[in-house]
Image 1: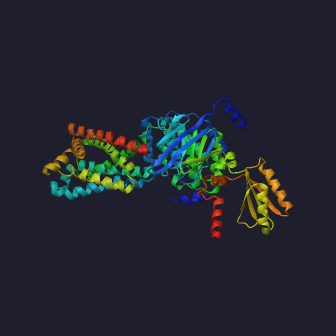
Image 2: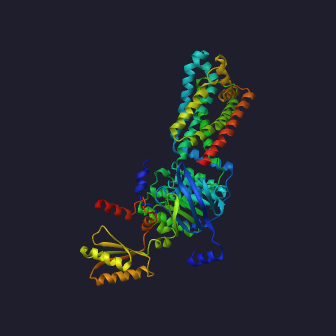
Image 3: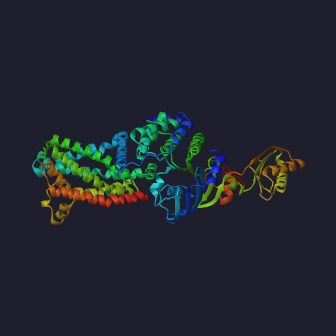
Length: 349
Length: 282
């Protein structure tokens, strides 16, 4: 669907909501795993739920997928209440959990045929569909092998294949790439894009910021059971600042001077990188100038002061920075920013 | 099977975006399967698991053979004059005892399965909710049948001669299967309730040992003290083993059959809903 037609569709009628929750709560003993979550997910998009381990992402997904009963608040999926109309919800959603949601003792084919039958397909249709899916997912060679002998990437694939036996209207992907190598991760991303391209709404939870950045159009940042920020990627990034300038100087001795120049020229917070010639300036939001205009001004100013810049790049703020700014603490997933700061701290101590 | 390492190293075939897109185009869904069809599909899953891990049949082959041999020769001479004499009385009872003992593996398999991700998928399917559990029990019914056939074969080799013939024997086994299916709901409940496989085993033993031994499987209860007779004569195991014994002997024990079926109905009525409640809550 082109952006224009999508926009036209939205204009013509009120946007349909795939998910709508209000003050959703789930407690486990003393802990409030989910503590008043409000989400609004329009259909046809990838909605990212981003947060560190234990933030309440999986619990939220389980409540939306009718696996857990909320202790408070309400949740509707395509207008159906997840508790009172659980069966109506179940017929339209699929879940790919954090751990492979297929039977490890059975083969790839057997798993897909089993689920196909449970979804009401006749034996022959179920078999055909299983074979086609295995083919599309590049698993034909492994079709007759027990899933317990599959590699991590193959498990993810069979798992997602099992989720789209019937094309779901809403697909929950709970940390779909956790523990995968970069290649397999890219392949999972390709699958997600293909699924969304056909009109399925995806709710993706992840603790990897670049994953949300790559796939999601809107993102909710969740921490300690609460949504602490929500918006498009652009909005979230803008909330942190206009962007940042990364510089590499020729002469490390000029770094303190360059730092001062940048601070004055850009209204920026300037950070020294571990590399003795590198600096990062995070631009403020006080002027209406674009990031590029500000950066150009800064470069001119540096040249006027006789500071030689070897290398220069202008970056949008990363979601790492967004997360850090929002929560005041780092993601436990080990973002690059976090580890650098930690190691600097150790050196200083 | 050493496929694990080879599959890891082998280059995965790429995902085909076009064929994937073609597969996703159809948005129509077949009507949801009937309760029976869903249960049978889960039963098929249980059979597939037996196919992949045939070692799990050990408990329905070796164990029953051991039970028949052990008790026939251990008690035979003392209780009935000779093992051959005793087995005419013992075999239907030991059949009931062994199959009821085997039912506890249902709890263990539910317990080990529930921790796995696949259960989450089953629970998000729009199907008749008890189908997963019924599927287990259907798979187990097959195992009970195997155990019964094995024991009967051993019994006949040792000299057991049922007067009821094929009809009586089949009727006896059928009644036993119905009862065991009902009895298994106790274990599905414990399988969902208890946290570890070991505790499921522990609780099962605590229930099964007294229940099966304190019955008329080995001896006529009339020599037992009165308080024990009160328990033994009213135990479901006694009713089932009397019914099976008489059916196999060519009689039609209406009262005992009614008692057995009544107990079966009660067990399902009590433990079925509890199991489903736990399953929905898990």
